[in-house]
Length: 84
Ligand SMILES: [Zn+2]
Image (spheres, rainbow, N blue to C red):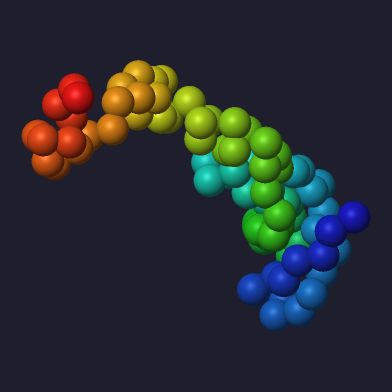
């Protein structure tokens, strides 16, 4: 059950033959028809489908072992690194 705005009737209508679709940006949308005039109605829903799919790809983007591979502190003064 989804309501949408029909541009032809210029009124809110119950979307007939409503089909839930997921757009490329991950948002949900309802696609259907106006029960009165039959014009195609498209209603974009607010929430995203799955927030876990976008967050799981975040840590994989960083290459493993960039800073942790070199534990030695970079000292700008050569005298500080010389052994005593
Ligand atoms: Zn209509």
